[in-house]
Image (cartoon, rainbow, N blue to C red; front, side, top):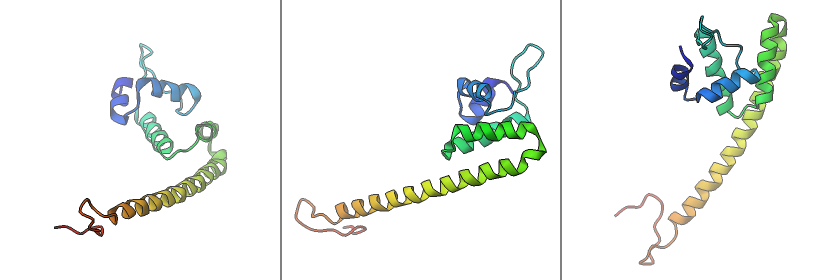
Length: 129
């Protein structure tokens, strides 16, 4: 798969894919005889993983370390697992913070639903005429 095809498939720009490879978020992508990137199944699995992790807010530094450890071999499995555990804890904390923010927004919206309309009638959320 070419970089343009991978870009369309995963919703990442070609520049982002090149950047991810350059900084070590993706292991080196195989090249064809002309030197053009040829994303194979393994490359695509790495793109999917990095896209998912970045969308979740996982730090680039942690992902670079994870990929570097992966490239060192099976002896680094425990260290890689620890990185993932740490990132999961951070994500859970952010999710809790986001849930609190969502709850607060919902409270504010409900307050507006209880305000009097232009005729001075208070309407509860869900009331319809």
